[in-house]
Length: 471
Image (cartoon, rainbow, N blue to C red):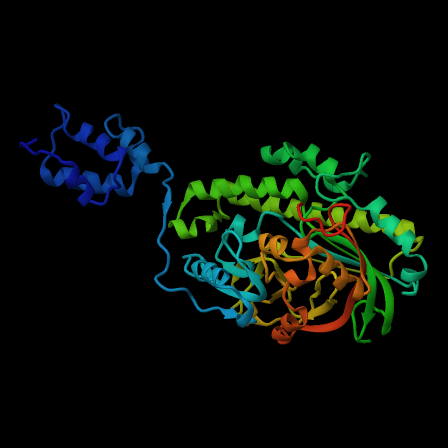
């Protein structure tokens, strides 16, 4: 071989990756029976690097070719500066949420983003963060409670029932709503549990029993089922309801244990495959062209369907108790990813983690607190917000701070003075732990049009006591 000595540095200079492949090439090229000129060696290496499949049957280079064809970990760098994004209600947003959004907008897959007025710090993408990506889905950009949503049933029943049959309505909530670990002894069946994915994807298969046992129930924390008064303010509405005041049921919950398990499983997969700097590690993504990416997408959509089924069963139970069918129902989710078109007509994956879809003409519900009104809205389709709006008032006080600083008696008096009765809640969900919903709505008047309001009157949350100091 004309006394040519092949070194690892020389192989690396030709563009080969560091690692086992270099060792395999050194072993082959420096074997006693290998005789080629210097130019021939270089040409062979270049050809092997560019066309490793050709060498899979070559005994000398098959191991090196196999190493080259193995999937490699994605080692990524963030953009030097974040892409521009719109912030709504900036004066009321904490620094941690802004910092998280800036990191998200430095991802190489980021195409557009926005931060809603109710935003606060979370894991990965902040709560209230909206992020459009190119052909990639971020499990923590969707969130742990996949498909968490709002659902409202409106009944053609006078609001006077709330005062006249208050005890009946409270018992209806106590007997027909379950939260956290408290589930129904005999849960109802639902067609969502027959989805073929429960037999096709291993992680989903393991979750079927849990899903079946928890269906029709709600999570803990800020999830609720409540009776209140809906006021339709605009006769121009897709609900086909005249202006007026109606009895309504409003619920907030997600995909329970199944959604959380899916989120954690695929987040671990994403973090194993997507090597990001420490500050961005929770924004690891799955390419939708990969098997894992397609699996997550299917699992995410199933979790969303399951969350919807839970709400529908909650509302069916309330309708039975009221002996009436709703005249309208509105439903929207806020922890999800959608395939949508951007302003240029290109497909993007829009993550809304604690943000409400607000495309042109899209109806949604933006709740306030247990004493402040929620809003029935119609989206205006504003591209600056990536067709999104806030998903609620948003926290102004952490759960820990609320528990340590708020006085239970003062909170109870505040709520009583608002004409609201609460069954089960913690100090962390007290109204003063949240931002002013009217200020939040004012900051997003370019994003949504208000069609009506919902005023809570009897609120059911996790637990049986009022304003527990510990959950």
